[in-house]
Image (cartoon, rainbow, N blue to C red; front, side, top):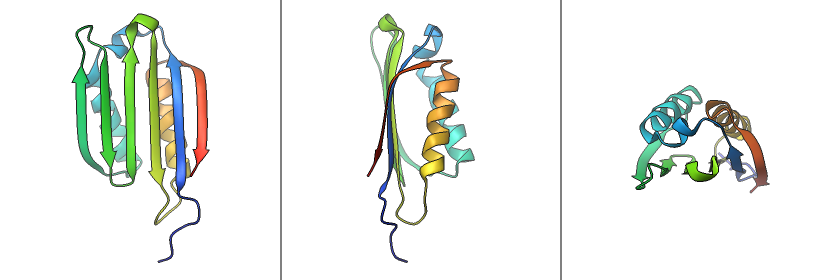
Length: 119
């Protein structure tokens, strides 16, 4: 099978939310993320997570198709999030869009910055 010419879509977001409790709950976010990835038929190959003294967190989920990462800043009511899925065997563009949209909805967030990079 010949690989698709587009390597994939990478979405990078800076979000703001009034839901500070969500910025402090890495376990809830990881469970939510596992569920949306399962729905999108995306395979997790590893997860790493770190909780800081103020309960903010950073997490990276390695996927068979690439990755997603989050870092929360409750003191600013913000988070950064990025997701990239490669298009090696199929076009995953719509999956990347849906994952990003689901994260925005999860945090009840407004988008401060959004960058979409077609690799």
